[in-house]
Amino acid sequence: MTNQQWMEEDLKYIWHPCTQMKDHETLPLVPIRSAEGVWLYDFEGRRYLDAISSWWVNLFGHANERIASRIARQARELEHVLLAGFTHAPAVELARKLVEITPEGLTKVFYADNGSSAIEVALKMSYHTHRNRGEDRSLFLSLTNSYHGETLGALSVGDVALYKSTYAPLLIRNIQTPVPADRSPEATRKAIDALDAILQERGGEISAMIVEPLVQGAGGMHMYAPEYLREARHLSSEYGIHLIADEIMTGFGRTGTLFACEQAEITPDFMALSKGLTGGFLPLSVVLTNDEIYGAFYCDYAEQKAFLHSHSYTGNPIACAAALATLEIFENDNVIRSNRSKSQCMAKHLKRFQTLPNVREVRQTGMIAAVELQGYRPEDRIGLEVYRYGLEHEVLLRPLGNVVYFMPPYVITEDQIGMMMKVAYEGIRQLNDRRGSDS
Image (cartoon, rainbow, N blue to C red; front, side):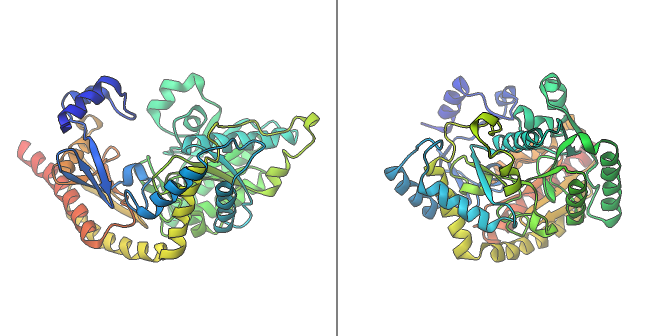
């Protein structure tokens, strides 16, 4: 079948996420036949460099043989068994490895199926911990401009105006404190002072504070300094508030260290991981926490303090095997050092964007880079124009509003980085040229 035939079949049956389906009256879908490394291939032989790791999940390239082989081997041995009253080697081995590599003090692993589910687990576990101790803390605290997923609890602690207004009657209680405006000491101090003021007023009501460490993903790749995390950890502890680190996007090497929390030298009470956990092969998430929180639920049955959350596919052996293969690549290939070299290559190419008049700011944290445009209204849909231009020139870019960002698989080469950046640069430049001709 051709691309056109697959697209027509798709539109008969599939409702796509994060998509206004009416757009596809004029914007063609891209049916993908296969993939390898950084490349996606359609049914007519065209290729697209995956500059966004297919929504930030792919770490070591599509169809990575080491991960694929581990999955195939596990599928022939044990595909699934319930993780209630039973266990299996991949879940145990993965839990042990995660405890070993995450910040000291995170000693227990709770399995879930995806990032939003992990956030739900962390929120419920925090609230329930306080409840088991006789405290009523049903309020949560998050940062402005944040995003933590799209299930109801995760939406509640995010800051996406459209979702908030649409689903407001369904959401749990949450207030927000300002994210630092940038990475400067002045912005950091101002945000810390605002957080302190909120905690002085309402600290006794708050169950947990949730943050995306260092980089707010869906919030336009907004970046702030580690010092804010350090002080947020101190203040939350002072008021008996749990700190939830949403490392679903930032985890596994994206920010220059294995986990973003390392750069602030903190241990949160909960750490949520997903996306890159399985190298982009299968859905899996985990919530790590500490012995103290685990102990708040450890009791005789009659006391009714057990944590109430489960998924049918909790700790799926095949997904755990994919995660184990992913972690083995980190162990054996010196990935973090290689990423630092590639992030320097990205930084060199980013300098060029600063010369464009329609670029407001260029920013980077590790293997995450962003170019924020200026002078456009939301209804101009500039991101869609850059997306179209990218596809026409063999690069998959999916801007966040007026922010063009780069989050490629770690197997990308320096030549491929150059190509990715050149296409994005030309796509942004042609927007500026077009605006000049229109005026």
